[in-house]
Image (cartoon, rainbow, N blue to C red; front, side, top):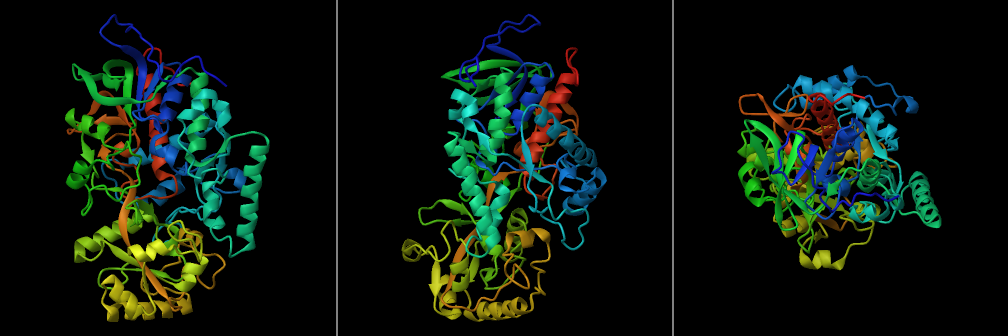
Length: 578
């Protein structure tokens, strides 16, 4: 499939109102090509002209680099799976997980997210986007004490495998799939990493191999994860002749008489004035890669060194909005994920390792201080809270024994394969005894051995009396389902022992502009800034300071981009909600 519109070429236009000092005129301008693509597609479907600007050479942003999952309560695929969900149940879950309403996570925004999420999925399906339910990928707080409304089988969706060849020449703009050359779904990862442990994992691996090989035999270029999501949205965008300008950096908003009327976009050595008659949607991510902003706003210590975010995540949209009077909130928050710093200084996400049997996390004093199996954002928040209270949480140490090393993947290395470089560089500490390991890590040996002894008693009984590890459905999902009696608890008793320092890394910040339930950006007095919308990681999240389930970030961006397109079209005489 080819398009008559080159994504690299601007199309000159004149404002219908008669102004001629614009370099390009459109109805709906979308800054950022991740979840914001949904807004552009919706605007086009409503009969409005749309334009997407993306500063990198690729389309998709952090969404394209990710697993491509969306957390959508009461979505239309759940009944097919025999699951009953409702807006009321989802809102009750959010109330328990997120807590009291606050800026960005008002009751009105929560209701808008839940109600419009289902509508958005139906719209995308009509446009040809094919979803599958991530069955078993539990809501992150399902089964956790004091939380109602969580679903153990999960509310998350991801796209089916997609043949990127359908995009024709546009496929070169897709970011590589997070699964590489495998047609591997995000929901299959937790099972397939236990390949050596169960027939179920082996069966999953066989399905993935067959799916991948089948695509190759049919000469398809199958992609999954974020690449599939972006590709499947991009295809109808191309069909609707929506231009996407790559290598086009948003510089600032254009405001006239108090209303946002367009934006300055730097492209091919020129700064273009782009008119947006219906409005501008900022969906360009946060500021994870901006050292100055991280040091000023993020929880400390943090200068962005530990982030795995999209390289273009430098805060352009947030800074511009702040210059023009936008209210902001939760700038200190991020999608935290425990992270290790590899020998080559590259940060690597460290998620599945910590929840498997035979692993604990201790602070600089050699003591456990939280449930190692909690959801990744919760883990990062707990690391920072402990550090703020004791000064001993950043970094912390993950401690395992040789049984864990022989059974589970570790920092991308297959079970039982420990690169010699890891030990020689000091990245991974090793000790024949726990006392030796404590010395290598600079930890108090008496505290570490006492901590491990107490943990081992819990492991034998299958009950974590200190932090209830293994009670939540998501904790079990990330554990080892072949291990009994608790899939998350196993003793640390087989030498040699290993440890690695872990940090509160992230995949993006989640603080920024405060918006209302119509995705309109609010000023510091709480009034909408005319013509300005925002969605995703450049906003104060509807999820507050939590992450309720897999795909909460992409869901937040996509749903409020969809809402923004609806609202902007409804404000014009030509706008209709079809």
